[in-house]
Image (cartoon, rainbow, N blue to C red; front, side, top):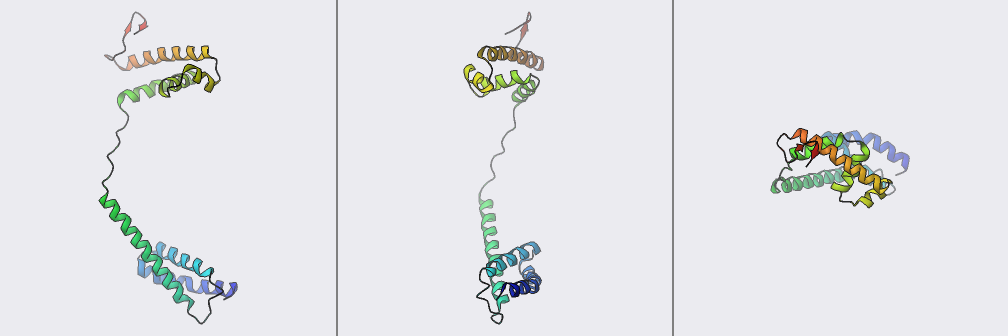
Length: 171
């Protein structure tokens, strides 16, 4: 079968085969997919097809086998999902974490970055300085100012929390 003959065959047979596979699968999209896949496989063999050797039957058979294979795969997946219990829901962030993130958002970016890198990422002051390109003294000042500002903001959020203000100093 030449390329032109195959194109004409495709144009004539695709709608008919899609209708047949739709009746078989009950899903028009699935029918189109398996018929298209069967035609792709036939394209690779188009030189071997003879017009009188029932190429439409070959494509229909391939498409039906593809549909059955997909159905079996979906059925196995569904059975596996039914046997596997759903994972326990992951709890959301606690109120302390939420308050910390909210307070961090209010800090200037340089202070926030220094605090996150040093306290949450466990980098040394020297490593923070290297990552941010700031001198070590500047990083220490940003950490000090950032911690003081965080203490104020978190103390305002927690009336009886562990951080208390006494005579203007944070303990």
